[in-house]
Length: 132
Image (cartoon, rainbow, N blue to C red; front, side):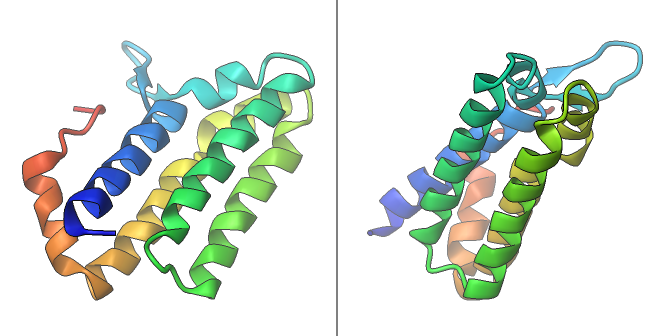
């Protein structure tokens, strides 16, 4: 993948992670949640759909040659959120606070700071965060 495609993929991961975990700000309290806990309210299929989005984010992250131990952490984050998230109500609250996609984005960005600092630096020009 060339640098432009890598940056586009990284920005897609950022946008999806923020959409799923921090796209909605609750007024007064200032707490942010995303579509993940909202989709999770749909019995049965909701958690499956949310896990599918998270798996897609991990798939995109593998294009950056992320090390196995980092990939294992990412899979653990999604797995934990999927298992605990399947518990009615308590799981939805867990989804709102745990934010596995944002955690996985942080793991990927930490990896990229070491191996591709120029890609990580270009984010400042190309990426405008949703949670501003």
